[in-house]
Length: 333
Image 1 (cartoon, rainbow, N blue to C red):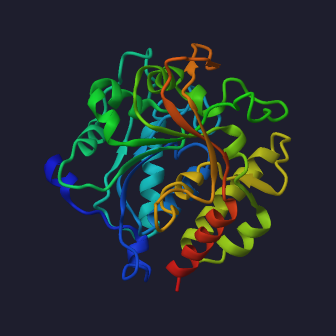
Image 2 (spheres, helix red, strand yellow):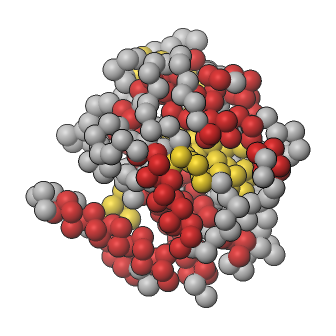
């Protein structure tokens, strides 16, 4: 099947198969881009979006991690991420017509040289569609390699989509960093040149969820056991992924306590769970500021020519998790 024909086909979400299809239909398109072979929070976000009938998932992109990352130290991280996504989609009994694409296994060499991949081509073609008026969101839960490369390759798509990115350090006037914080911030550090390309070189609208905001997405282990684990193969699978990580970390003397940061789940909150009228993520809070310049070390610098971007400061975590729990339960009725 040719890519042009594929782009025109409607893709079915699991939410449309779970008894919600009569009342809720898609009102936006999303491309999900995440490091699924890394932190398992991306798998929770993927499952949640696939259960959300208000979004049409156009593609799932598996992206790379930092070289030598402990979650996946291989040289085929993007390929492994796509395999993980495919595994979850199959477990959920989803339609196979949602493209699951491996992105680049390497970061951009610099902030002006795009990588080439099928994922980059898909983003460009989806953004340039003229047969739909549904807004397009590119949801990035890790690095920005693919969207940065797409913007560098075809700058005209900047006005045809919104990038929602989980990543970046705190803004010093908005929040303090956590104790023993990493610098650069984890997701930004996956591909600093890509972040520089998106922030410094492009005009694309950005909704940023920096570290102080995504760290609010704390799921207690008690709720994982009561609200996730009992609900079918998917709930069991997602729970086992977290428990396996807890066991693995304990072998290295790391005790992560009884909560886990589901830092990628705000990608669902800010899209699928927008308000009914005057659609927007109305129960979460953000500030509008001029986009900073990101330097070669991954730090913010003032940019008097920056464009306005959204920087989220507080997230409606209760809405986000309660919706996920309910959709898991509905799926297994």
